Amino acid sequence: MRHVWKLKYGSHTIQVEKTLSSEKLFVDGVLQDEQLGFHWSSRLFGKVQNDEGETEDIKVSIGLFLFKVQCRIFVGERLVHSTDIQWEG
Image (cartoon, rainbow, N blue to C red; front, side, top):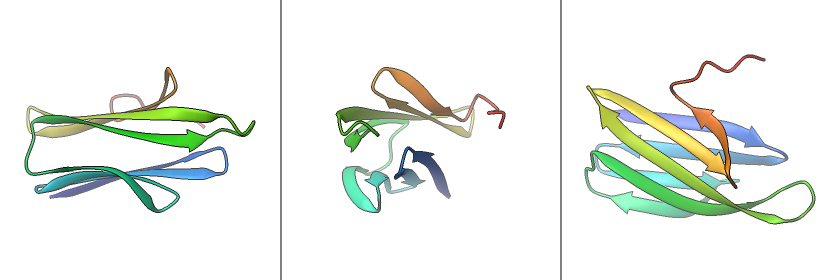
């Protein structure tokens, strides 16, 4: 089981990977946080620069609910990705 969520944030790429043995947060291909082992839920933390050059915190929540993996990604205080929400272009 491998799940990958990838999104653009400004000129940056945020990628979250979940396998049976780990969860990882990458920004522009650089590993920023990692949790090893199997978890029903976990949090990952990182940082990214916005278009104004300010550093913003990244918080990722991953959980296994009713055999479905859910992922929510926050930048600052804003939800920028959720597996529960169908984003419209």
